[in-house]
Amino acid sequence: MSNHIETKCIHGNLDFSWDEPTKAVSFPIYQTATFGHIGLGHSTGFDYTREKNPTRQHLEEILTALEGAYDTTAFSSGMAAVTAVFDLFAPGDHMICSEDLYGGVTRLVNTIGKKNGLMVDFVNTGDLDEIKRVLRPETKALYIETPSNPMMEITDLSACAELAKEHNLLMITDNTFLSPYLQNPIALGADIVIHSASKFLCGHNDTIAGFVCSAKEELAAKIRLIAKTTGGCLSPFDSWLVMRGIKTLAVRMERQQENAGNIARWLTEQKKVRKVYYAGLETHPGYEINAKQARGAGAMISFDVDSVETAQRVLEKVRVITFAESLGGTESLITYPMKQTHPDVPKEWREKLGITDTLLRLSVGLEHVDELIADLEQAFVS
Ligand SMILES: Cc1ncc(COP(=O)(O)O)c(C=O)c1O
Picture (cartoon, helix red, strand yellow):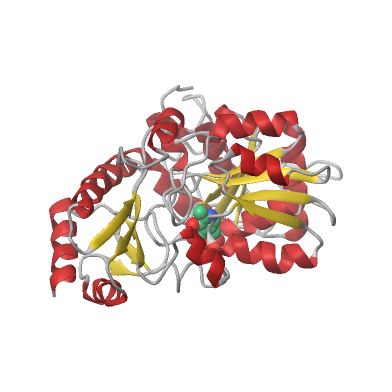
């Protein structure tokens, strides 16, 4: 077993003498829906792939090691993972969420969550007083993104965990933006960590997947029951693709983050850029808290430009960078949050947060940083 995250990305918590029967170096894809029974009441431990599959199980063990969790369940998307966590709650339960969240989660809350009787308050979770202000006897959970999508707001995870403990709340953290390479919310007191593995974990813009990592046995059992019952499981082939992606997570995150730091600093000097949102800049209000709880600021930057025309020109003129949704892969992507990731967030709410028609979000990939900067430069002036 290793203490180093680079090794865990490849071997999880496995003992190096681990005995996959064929000794295959690349874990086999068990492309099977069902498993034969040895006899009545005797199973190999695998019965039906919706519930358990060796390839998916191997991947889940790697995530458990990376997040320091008790157990991990893999889902067919990040949203399937979020939905499974929402299924823990009953009508009348109340949840407090970060107000700046991936727009798909806001949509889930405002549509299916509401229909199912879940009550939610969205607040700036970076301010503990705001959380305390909306606490009620029915409050069951705190749902946090840090850095948040797309405004890169930072929430103090240890402080929230303390508050959650005091009020008997489940603390849920979406760790998609930093990945377990840069941040481990369970070590800071979170009960559940969610990932859209479609992003940095898989890392190649070619697979949709999600994870729920549980800190405790009882919670893990509830999530496994929900997964088995509702059926949003990750396929064996996609499990293998995510597993392969994670092998290079450490080196990808390091280089993507280095590129992002250089681009963020360059953006702050551009006349057409009004504001840069990146927690790695010392001027970011969450810089110190992020530095205390994470091992870096990651590879996501949002920035506000001087006009809608500039925003439109940048989106249309970039060539090395692709104008597309999503993030975290080897290819740099630029997104227009107002229309692509957050169209279902009400306009007044978007505007309060700063998700306006001049906001762009950049996921920095692995291309040479000079070419990425040159691409943005030509897009600003052309
Ligand atoms: C922070 C965050 N969480 C969850 C999701 C949902 O994940 P998926 O697209 O894999 O369903 C996304 C998607 O963009 C995201 O950015």
